[in-house]
Length: 583
Image (cartoon, rainbow, N blue to C red; front, side, top):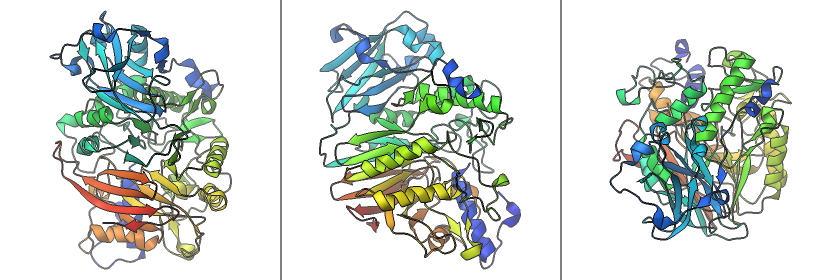
């Protein structure tokens, strides 16, 4: 952060305001060759129908056994369908070396008196090649629109009980859908009390918008001047400060998923997951000329072979530890064709939800060195975040969606975050859609022409709570030059990653509300901003409205009693692209 531009005590001027707006945004965000995945044995869920059944009565469970000894990362479920979901666990290497049997049981009750599914998993499915993880795909085995309880049992020791949820049938008409939205959980910058509160929420699903892990072990992305607590210390197998090897990335998931509060949230709610940059490397992008990724924050991050190897390592560990239903084709000749993360989930006729991938295809920053003041390439034609195929898929999805609420799980802020007017207007977030203005204009123009009844975008990455209006276009030289309203965008605070309160020291003439007001005063499409709190959001869709509630949870308390309070609550009425404040 450019300390020489810091304002001093006194009245704010344009330079001060620009510095603050960019600083809080930057502080909040933190921070042949292409076919390499085809050479790897990437873990794929095993179909439950391919496993041998076992009589539930024959499965003995020792109620006194410690589940952490055998299943240190507990359980997780993801990839819901109308007739199933993917159940995940990891067997401790010491236990996996034994001769026990691993069994998955699914029941309608938490006591497992009514077991619906009981199968034996061959030990080759949780071998060291896959970091001893196992994923069982229950698609086709369960009833639509239902909660189930599940557990894995190994040689008499059972995991903690997980709960999963199937989707409604596509032609169903559910009355509501309630999800928690989380992102950005830097293990070294804070504790996960927010996840404990998420676990207590009555939800249908948990949406994770990415940065599930951070690739650092040296506190690189933590608040300046803050030491990493002893119980949050990390040491990568490679000895490097940033993850590079497959063992490094696996180690991060091993440590993160031992956190009891994170486990509670993952046990309680089926996860719909996307990713962002830190699962591999901060601000990563694709260099079309080299046909390889670039990892700006890593040593040799601009070396195509090295960057591809690190990227493949990060992807492999993510796929092993985050169950989701994505397309993987190891026979494809290019990474972009091997792994397809974009996908669609339908919650009857109420919500039509799409997840996009905004990292694997994106071009680099519009100008070198992070320059935003003198950069004029943000709106250059041809720059892409989605890539041509995914962009066309997105357009087809929004055009053809007939659900009451068409909802986009999006990684980075779509709305502009600017300072100044006319020729002095500066976009401060080139890693977000401000750095891809022509493509953003294409998407927003498409919504203006073919937009669905209600369009809601759920976004993470920026480490703040925010709500605002999406427009058909945004004026290049004047904020008043905006197109018609086409949707609303709702941001969730970070679980624990650095935000403005962690990073900035304000002069005496500023308080938190002043800093928040800078953003809304300079950007009239923003209705609400809070740069200073960690926490999560809950979004509930009904026939009449979508309700967004942002919560603050103290990330300095490693306690289930971590203080929680409501930051704001807004309602989006059906058929109206507007936000009405409730509190």
